[in-house]
Amino acid sequence: MEEGSGGSTAAGGGGVRWGVVVVCGSLVYYHCGWRDASLLSLFADVLIVLLCSLSILGLLFRHLNISVPVDPLEWQISQDTANSIIACLANTVGATESVLRVAATGHDKRLFVKVVVFLYLLSAMGRVASGATIAYAGLCAFCLYELVKNSRPGRNDSSGGTQDSS
View (cartoon, rainbow, N blue to C red):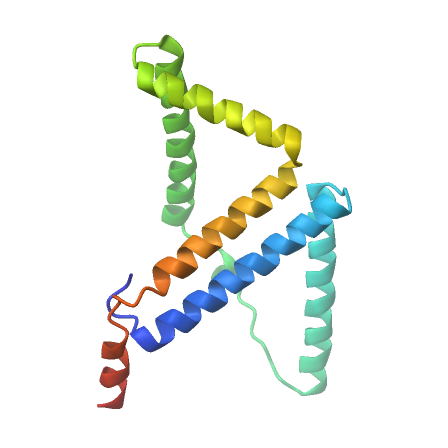
């Protein structure tokens, strides 16, 4: 997708990134689907694991006399980033509301039928499987789609390798 990223690292980085997404999705599916725990419990467990990992790393760095500067300003996001995240969420909610409003008025018959069929399919899937199972299946389908999209033979992967060797 990015032209200047180099083809040799783009395929490996994309695979690793989607591998991490599948592992995180599997964790959420196991925690919420099989253990019947809530998302709050999942977030608490993840927070405990992160805090324990950071404390062990801190003890290791202290033992090896490695200083890690921690600047609180590095962890903050800019105002523009926060505004763009909120704008993206507002646009998504606004677009969904407008689609449902137009479908509810009945002026666009095709949109009305699409919304009704989609909502019926969601209802039927909700009766057959749990929400965590459906979300996990969607995550797996999305990851497979991205993996196939990024590993197409038509991509210009050989140009990145020749640029690195010259």
